[in-house]
Length: 279
Ligand SMILES: CC(C)(COP(=O)(O)OP(=O)(O)OC[C@H]1O[C@@H](n2cnc3c(N)ncnc32)[C@H](O)[C@@H]1OP(=O)(O)O)[C@@H](O)C(=O)NCCC(=O)NCCSC(=O)C[C@H](O)C(=O)O
Ligand SMILES: [Mg+2]
Image 1: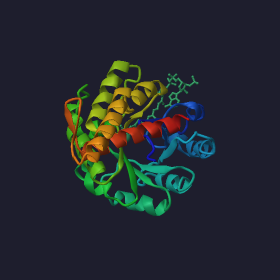
Image 2: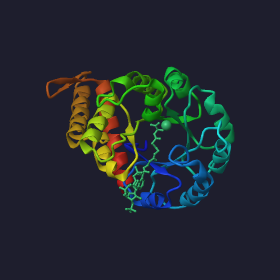
Image 3: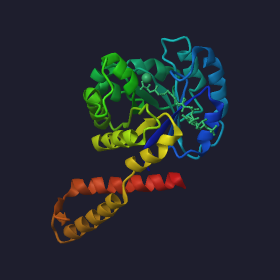
């Protein structure tokens, strides 16, 4: 069954307390960050703290390690240190498919994830998504806004071209894709608006910076009760229509064809995966 990735929480790998706390948080996945959330003076210590933290039990949550870029003095050591022991390695600032090749060689067994956060990366999203070792993509909307010189807008109009290109690329190649962070972690209404926008666009989930963002995000990216109930009725109605030799059913005045049944089955599978993770 496919894992859910509704909520993907960043934790600075220099913060031992936060990494411990994460063992009991309701995040679907965790990104242990060695890159931007860790100051240069803390990089070496963070690597050691993280190696210890990864021995703990995170109750089935996906554990993803964001390494420093290979152009930095820490990148290669990070990749070697976490070639095993995590569920995936997240590569920052991926601009083209070949950026993943060197990391892939250093990390032969773990799946790779790519931070999508450069202008070049947006233009090469399809090539990046096609990389054979890639499992998932993470929007880095802070870095992207910096590169674009765009202003923050609640409707994220300046981000739409990049978000759309990456989403298309991820879907074309069957990759997981999660939306960028919402920086104002005490603004619940703003977070809900952005989660709903991301969910409506088709993202699997959202990256988060604070545990206070988990509940809203998990709620918005999960199938709602009415969606689950509708999915069940669509499947039942289609099965009945099929038994009568018809290819189309009607539910609540709307047609249900094979493709809608596939979506309905995916909704039920996602709900089941969420329930399984919750235990
Ligand atoms: C944003 C923060 C610096 C706020 O920290 P703080 O003031 O300590 O928060 P609180 O006092 O409210 O914390 C309450 C308790 O929650 C724990 N905590 C806080 N944050 C996390 C977390 N991320 N994961 C797990 N636990 C967390 C605290 O330890 C407190 O616990 P307790 O002691 O039991 O009370 C801080 O939240 C933070 O550092 N967040 C992560 C920032 C980060 O990782 N940034 C980098 C990723 S964002 C990015 O780079 C995206 C991308 O690349 C782009 O370009 O867009
Ligand atoms: Mg970034």
